[in-house]
Amino acid sequence: MNGQEHELEAFLRVLDGAGCLEHVVLIGSWAEYMYAHTDILPGFSPNIRTRDVDFLVRNLRRPQPAASVAAEARKRGYHVDSDRLTGVTKIFSPGGLEIEFLIAKMGAGLESALSTNVGVTAQSLRHLGILSRSTITVEYHGMGVSVPSPEAYAVQKMVVNGERDKKAEKDVAAIGRLWPHLDQAELGRQLSMLTRAEARRAESYMEEHGLSADGC
Image (tube, rainbow, N blue to C red; front, side, top):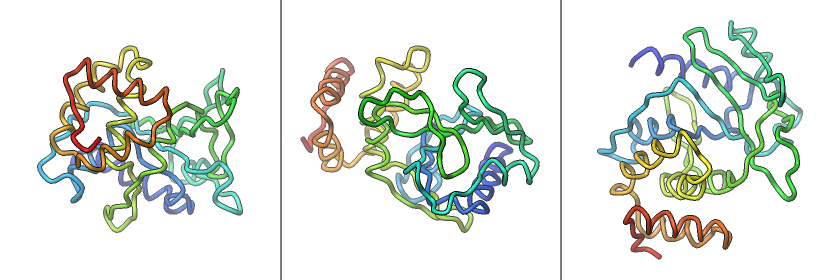
């Protein structure tokens, strides 16, 4: 295990110690790491080139009573900061990982950030519900860690690809690596749950990149 993997494990233990691990979902490139290093996608090989770790908060009102990841992190030697403009919490591990929290934007969703009961302020973004409604909990070093299903992960990346700017090309590569490993029936189910606008985005992406979903 390399240094970044040790840092990830250590922060998962921070979340566990704060009583918040079950209330968040590991997303982004480190979810791909979990696909490869558990039994989710045998034979899949991710390309982890980031020190950013993102967690999706399932529900801003859970747990009850409220906990504090930020306080637990400080106690264990992490640096905790807030974005000056948005107030979004940023946590830096001793080894240099930058950890942030996101939450699904609901309804009118005018807020760019929301205070949550896990004790951090999370960035509010559209289309994250695609990830939170289809999760898998895996055992990782004795902890139960939730990640999006690979099919939900790929679908969400297709939906938001046009908004990703500098990260769009990286996401195209990630989808391409995942595609041969996806369950086609489950992929079709994920596509069927999209809103009309999201479905149009996903269809456009698949047409542009020559992908097909046999389960549709």
